[in-house]
Amino acid sequence: MEALMLRLRYPQQAFRSGMGILRLAKTHDRVRMEAACARALRIQAISYRSVASILDKGLDRQAPEQPDRPIIPHGNIRGPEYFH
Image: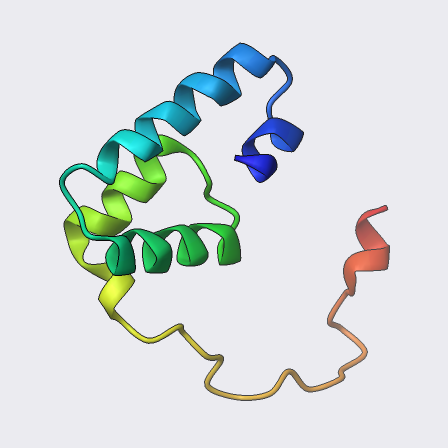
């Protein structure tokens, strides 16, 4: 809820989205809800629709994705400072 309130411009939108996420807890157990919300926070997709999709597709039961290889430094790769 805190992440929703900070992200959305109008508190009413954040409240409605948060209530929808809480309503999902009626059909899913606490462990799945916690895992789905943690995954949503990790991928920065904290809307009702995103959490519902994570639960529907069973992504909450999968291990977090890890990058295959470490990022290598290279002169042609722009970092985050390039886009500011």
